[in-house]
Length: 225
Length: 225
DNA sequence: GCGATTTGTTACCACTTTATAACCAGTCTG
DNA sequence: CAGACTGGTTATAAAGTGGTAACAAATCGC
Image 1 (cartoon, rainbow over the protein chains, first blue to last red):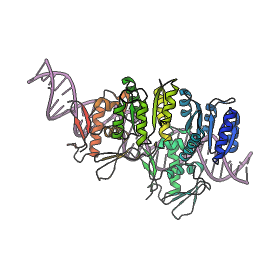
Image 2 (spheres, rainbow over the protein chains, first blue to last red):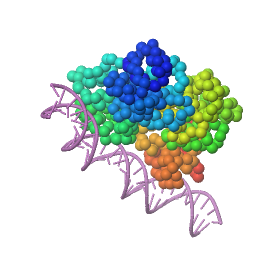
Image 3 (tube, each protein chain N blue to C red):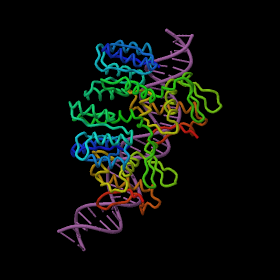
Image 4 (cartoon, each protein chain N blue to C red):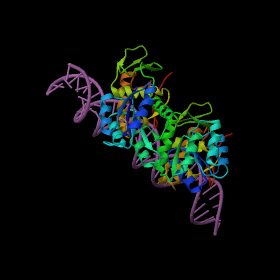
């Protein structure tokens, strides 16, 4: 599990890096925003820790840029009391924040919680629910005993979200956010299309969905018998 | 999602209550510490907002008592600069704090972030009162052992409000405000219609309401035996 | 760079939900 | 008692939602 840390405070960078390494994470360090963005594209980390005050490009800019291309979990490091910064960060799509100063214990707990929420903790191997088996590595689903079906990136991500909460309805807004990131918020058409395409692939009769059902006015859910 | 607010400043209590209600939370209000603790046991809220300075029992005491029996997320309202208070609150088990004064936008952002962190944002399951079971995720109600009935957004919202204060009459004005927001205020027809439609769905004989009853001249209430 | 795949955009239709209006019966009030 | 008001009902118009198709734009693999 790779984590990118960006902070211009060298001591803090060292401390955070050490703490995370001790807990078994692979750590990538950046001491300014530009470097952070370069390393992000280059390394594709599973989680990003951003200080707001940085030279080069500040935390907001980096967060916004990352959100343009990815839905990776982002945690911001904030200075206690800077309310405006905090709200701005959350609205830009940051998933959580951590007030400085913080204890290593807190850091680990929050990082783990965030990874868990993003459904990334388990890692390898296919996830299953009911008659569905999703393999995120191969980008395939298998329905019952049928042959595995190839999925596109977005289709896989949608199914991942639905599968992670199998049996429960997930709101359209939430799906939009999780699949497309911050930018996609509000565009229902995207979701309509994606659902349509996924149904073509996994339903035996796409016009009468048995697995990926609509909860009118609410969202979609994966039915597991 | 139920939130308990405790603050002795009546104006602030009103503002916070209104803000949260607008965002779809069910709000329980207390203006002193003793009341807060009583309502906590009684209502079992999903998040607690505590002012530190309160008559009865102050925020610290309330927070400590709550922590004896629950791990519910607690957010403290603090006065900027009172570092001592802040540290004490966090040591007592508060999960976050908010400096006064704060904007409604900040409040919402922080409350949501805290709920997210606590892993409560998604399906906290259906809320129940009497023979009614309301599932806000799926937008359905179940009356007794009948099949669940689908609700529209507004219907669900109305029932959420009534259910959150089951057994108590809620004034028409308040319902209008909470379901439609600012703009709907004053239009009784909207509410008449909505009540009518909800009764068609949940009452066995809609012309003789057993559950959603009228309090003439006052408002409506949900009867729980 | 080229063809194939994937993703985004626009449009249309059927259907549901919400808003608006009108009518009726009962109650309250001067 | 008349007139104003309230709440319930019905009918209809306006707005919104979800499914589908066709096509354009972007991206990927070679």
